[in-house]
Length: 274
Image (cartoon, rainbow, N blue to C red):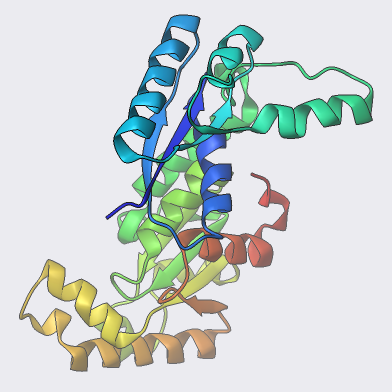
């Protein structure tokens, strides 16, 4: 059961507040109940959120934690007020205002990370990368692989698809992914479509026991999901990647963020921007 309510209140999407808040909360052994309140861009909406915070404090008998990213002073004052019964952590006042003093300039006080997004080259790159990842998921297409920033290879269900989409959505990286299957192992070579692009390949592997668990959820009782087959495929895939000189890592105990950062560090360090 959750043991603390945490509000993320923003006049934009709330991604900044939640990302930062989650990083801080991860340092504590608690189970937060997340309450996302994006687009709080009027005083009336702020009052509604403050009432909800106070009702939560009354009901639970302890004050909620409230992370806010609110640019407008009038809106912010409603939440960051002595009558608000939450522990309010104001990211802008904590970081932006000291930086204004240090840099000697005022911030642009834009509401939200995605203001004027349609004019952003980075946003356009991300959309292109997402489309690319979807078109090249699970070896669906070998067309335009020369445009890929990275090609993820590994056995089925080793984490290639979510990692490809994360790289596209967060970093604008064009990531294709290609499964290694028993036919490849019997032939003793990478799929022919990948041979010209081997320098772009990055491998994902996984603990066979964990792989069997994942596959059983998809195809219970099948040979595809059997532990014996999973051990064979993982061993054969790792042997192939070693022989081909393809860098690889295990996704068993790593988050998608950790996997993506490792890939970017090794293949596209210029894209290590958040």
